[in-house]
Structure formats: structure tokens, C-alpha cells
Image 1 (cartoon, rainbow, N blue to C red):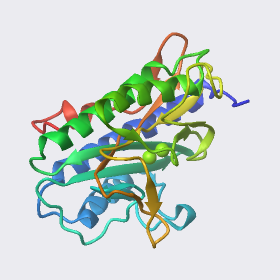
Image 2 (image 1 turned 60 degrees about the horizontal axis):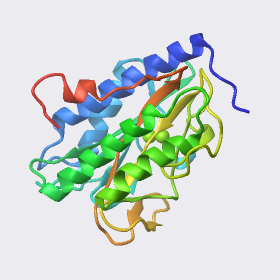
Image 3 (image 1 turned 90 degrees about the vertical axis):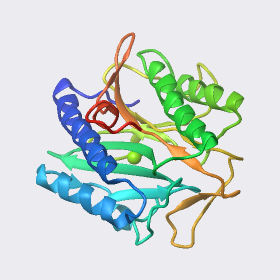
Image 4 (image 1 turned 30 degrees about the horizontal axis):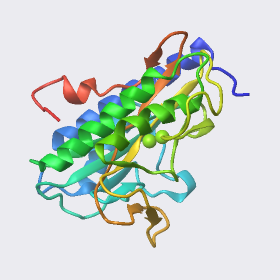
Length: 259
Ligand code: MG
Ligand code: MG
């Protein structure tokens, strides 16, 4: 049985959720054709440290950098590199923070310049499926309700769900129980109760759902090399509703950037 978080713990997770949200927005400001993914990583690491926190991914099981940056057919766990972003690319940015012993974890897939209509549809569907999943993160439901909501939203649109990776609980550790798959059956799996803090993170493929691990042991690619998108938010399970601890509002509602 997963121990629900206390309200004091939730406040620390909320601070982290806010910081990862603001970090992703800082990254979004510099996403553009001609920018390297290492530059995105530099912006994020500087911002996290300037806010008195630690980039939690750096050093996690040997991961080298503050951000996971996954371009086009890379689903997740890509390394920032000297790759120069091109018009029409998509870049998935996964960010983790550690502040006062608790974690933040969220991800956003940014279009680079103008993307084609099919790619726009993949991004929109993946993000919408995340919110469908969040609607199910309420006391008394099960993780299968979340997975089913994601899967039943994206599959009729012609997209597929990565099975090998899933969301997770969040607390003092970056990955806690329960696992939160992005597929499943209603009423199945671990039970959700008030105070549980989970990350919901659909990883959705434009083509078929097969993936493989790159030779570096980290980057997960689609087997058909079609694009994949990844959006992640942290929520608290409550009675009758889920409460978001992280948000895309800083990316989408502040300033003039319209992703
Ligand atoms: Mg993440
Ligand atoms: Mg996560």
C-alpha cells in the first residue's frame, strides 16, 4: 500500500512542481531553429540552481545532464548534445528538480518553428490525453482508469501508446509506487487514494508503438523512427478531483509564446 503524502510534504512537492514548470517555460523561450539541445540544458540547469534547487536527473543512475532532451523519434531519455534544432523538429524536454528533499518532475514537447499538421496533431493529442488521465486521478479510482483514459483517447486518432515506460509516484524519491501505465482497463491496477502524488506522462507514437534502447543505454527510440511526444504533469489525488502540482501555464499563458 502506498502511503499518502502529508499536507506538509505536498507543499514541498508543490514548490518543486512550480519550479519544474517555470524551468520548462524558460527552456521554451529559447527553443528555436539553430539552437543546440545542450544550450537548452544549460538554460535549465542555471535556472534550477539560481532558484536554490538541484537538477535531480544529473547523476541519477549515471544520467549526465539536468534535462532529458529527446528529438523527433526519441521518445524519452535523450542526452542533450551539439545537435542543432531544425525547423519542423519536435523536442521533448523532461525536467526534474530536488528541493528540500523532495522532487519535481514534468515534461513538455515543443515544436521547433513551424511543424506540419500531422505533427501538430500528435502534440495536441498527447497533451489532451494527459489531461484525460488527470481527470481520472481521484480517490477510489485505480491506475487502470488513468491508463484507459489515455489509451482510449489517442488510439482512435491513429496513434499508439508506448508500453515499456510509465508514470510513477513522486516524493523523496523520483520514482515511487505506484507505476502509472498509459494503457489499461478501467477498475484495474493499484488503487488511488487522497494524498497520493503521482506523475502522469503519456508517451505517444505517431506510428507503431515498438521502441528500442540506443547503444548509449539511455535514449529510447521508436522502432519505426516516426515521431513520439511526451507530456508530464505531477498531481495530487483528491476526493472528486485531481489537483495539479505542476502546470504548463507558464509556457502557454505567459508572454507571447504560443505552443
Ligand atoms: Mg519526467
Ligand atoms: Mg516522470
